Structure formats: C-alpha cells, structure tokens
Length: 557
Image 1 (spheres, rainbow, N blue to C red):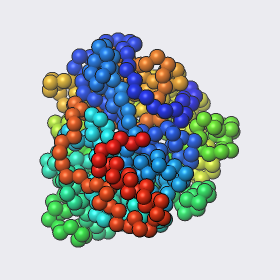
Image 2: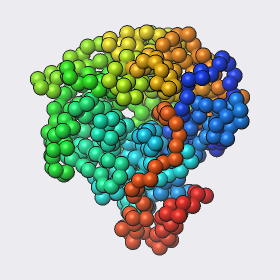
Image 3: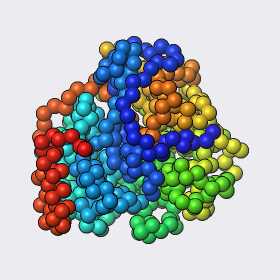
Image 4: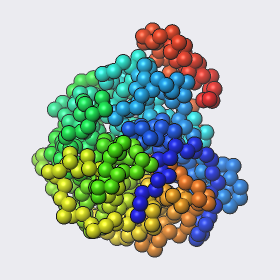
C-alpha cells in the first residue's frame, strides 16, 4: 500500500468540476467543504508544510459556482497575502528552513493549515503566523488578524515587514461570546489572545504557564480555555541545516484558564491558570463544552510521531530502503500505534482521571484528522468522533527518526506488514469503536468533515448526518460521502474527475453556505510599513507596490 507519489508533485492546481461516479449524492448533504493546504510549487524543499497557503472549496450542491448541471464545483486559490505577493515578486530572496520561509522582508505567513468558519467569515491559520481572513466566495485575501504590534513576536532573524508570530493553527470561536480565542507564545511564555472580529487584539500573559515546545491546538468549555504543550521539537542546529538529536517531549503541561478571569483582568496583566501533567505527547484535543461536572477532553496522542522531522536527500526508510525522492519533505509518520484517551480534569481539586482509552496496535496506526459536529447543539451533546487512520507506513519513517527515538520505540508492536487506511467512528462516552470502514489500495484519506442533515433535520452530536472524506490516490483524487450513523456500510456516493490527482491536503471544515465576507474593520499591510527603511531601496519599492495592490484590490500576478 505505497503512499501516493502525486501528493508532493509540484503540479499547478486548477479548478475542477467533479462528477458522480458511484452511488447517489444525498439530497440533504449540502453546504461547502473548505480545505487548507500548502501550495505545491514549493514542494521538494525541507518540509511540505511550509508552502504558501491555498484554499480549496467544494460545493456539495451540484450545478453551483459555475459547474454545469450534475457536476460539483471544486475551486482553488492561493491566498494572496503580503508574504505570498512579496515571494511572487522576489522568489530568489525566500529561503526555506525547518521553521518556515525567511527573506529580507521577514518570515512568510503560510496560513496553510486549517480553515476556520465564523458565521459568514472565513479564516485560514497556521502555527507561526497571525490568522488571515479570506472571502468564502472569491477566496481572496482580506487581511490578517490584529496589527503586528498587538502580538508578541519572535525576531531571531531580521523581520522588518513580515513578523514571526508563534500562535496556534487551531484558534476557536466562542459560541456564547462571539469572539475568537487564540494563543501567542514567546520564549516558553504563554499568552491568551481574544479578538472580537474587528479592532485590536487583546492579549494576557498567563502566570505560571510554560510552553516547552509549541501550541498547535486550543480547546474550550463553556467557562474554560485549555492549552496543552504540543509535540514539536526544534533544536538550534536544525535551523542551520543540522540533524535532530532529541525526540519530542514524551509529555507536557496542560493549562486550564477561566474565561471570566481573563475578561475581568486588564489587558497585559497576568491571569492565573491551573496546570496538569499529561503524557504521552499530543497535538489535537477536544473538550466537551458542558463543564458542569468538570472538564472532559478527548486527546488524540501523537506518540512517537514527529511532524518536525521530514524526509531529505539520502534518507533510508524503516525497512532499510532508500527513501523515494518523490516523498522529499514528507513529515515523519508514527513509529508507535495510536492512542486516543478521554481525560477528566477537576480544576477545583487539581486532579485528573483517565476515563477511557482506545489503542489497537494490530490495526490503528497513523491517525491523522477527524470530523465532529461543530454546531452549537452539537457542542452541547457530542456523541460521535470520527477519525481517519492512514495505516502503518514504513516508508514514512526514516532511520534518522528511529535513531532519535531509539529508547522509546517498541518494534515488537509493529505489524508484520502495512495496515489499511481506515475511517473509524467512536462513541464519545467510552471511546468504543462503533463503526469502521477500510479504504482501498494506495488510498491516503485526509481531513473528513461532518455535515448535518439540511434544514435542521436530525439529531445533533455527530451520529446523525453525513461524513464527506477527501481521498488522495495516484489513480485519481476522489470525494466519498458516508452515512455518519453507518460508516461500516461504506460510501453512499463518490465524486471524482477521472484520473486527476490533487496534492497534499491538510485540515478541512464545513460551511453551511458560501457568502461574500461582510463589511468589517480590517487591518491593512500598508499600515504596517513602519520599518520599511531597514530594507534596500529596491526591496522597499517592492513592498510599497504590494501594499498598493492590496489596497486597490489588484489580483496577484
């Protein structure tokens, strides 16, 4: 079951109209599938995650957005942010590193990891830059969240115009307050960020909070924000092209912060938190919104996986085979079976309790992304969690990784051969597997979305609706639709465009509809040129040109 080689080909993306090739598309599976991804013209570098961000949008209603009757419009666009425009004008100045792409202008804000709907607004995010807003219809760039000076930035290399701001790829919208919660980290310190959709960003330092590595996710209950340290290890020598010598931390702190304590504290003053230890390492985690009996969180642990290590020239895979150059830049896949845990925190007593665990070494490997009901009723009564497993893939593990993790990897748990890719549904009460669907040869499933039944029919929670799953394969990209209540039945409908392939994709989200972005106060790049005098005249002129283009709405060349 080889990994598709087409996922990292530097092919230029194009708009497609997908056809129904199997089954019948459910009439009440509607809305828009939105996917974030790195643009493939940067593939082949040190890490596939660092390409300029782009957005894919698939309309789940045939015959819309320019598609002919019976076809489904798949549209795409590179996010034409200031950093993407500057890179297009002066590509020779941008240098990819294992921490991002640097130039004399500063660090590119890739915004390539996750889409975040907020009413009729749409944000795109990543871990080392401010969220950016894009228009859900045209997919054009509208602005970055907050002015540069409102965030704490890292500047270990010159960044006169493009700051490096370490944040999270998964900020979240508070359904009660209608605000965006995010984080900002700086030299191990944690700040919580709040934005009301216009105007300035508010930021509070969190007393006693330490981030040893990074923050990839933030989650919430009605009254609490939860921020955990995530498994992303970057050593100083790696920035200069050296090899890793240390694995990601085996565990880390979990910080629990009351929302009302933040809002009662003047901006800039410290806010207390409760700290809990947690292992093994993790990247994605999701809290139950109802916190009347404490805080319950599902942790998708990333035990002995390393997204900060990527395949490079001369690497050898787990079975001693030379790594295929077609996979250069691919992140390190898991060396241990997946572990998913349900953990209950009591902020009053400072205790935690492991309530359930899902771990099946013979089958569940390389869990990637997930789908759940993000509606307001769904947050209150979550019932199902749907996860994609890409399978045990020795060619996605390098000998360099195995050497770094040599004291932590138990090879006796490795399957005799590769395992299939799976779509798995679990009960959120006890993590019991309720359904499992096996995908085919050469399939690499990506981020599924949950689509509730149209017109409000059905029950909330994730068990009553549809799952829409993009699948990458060298034989052709496809979209599969499953009944969320009966995943084991297999797809009820499949969309494709012949043998056309798509590149590497990251997180996806569901929009009930795509509408033009509403009017709002937005910051402009032309208002952040205070340090333009640090640049040579020709580069300053290029930056001013980009600022004018963005102000005038000129399409990116």
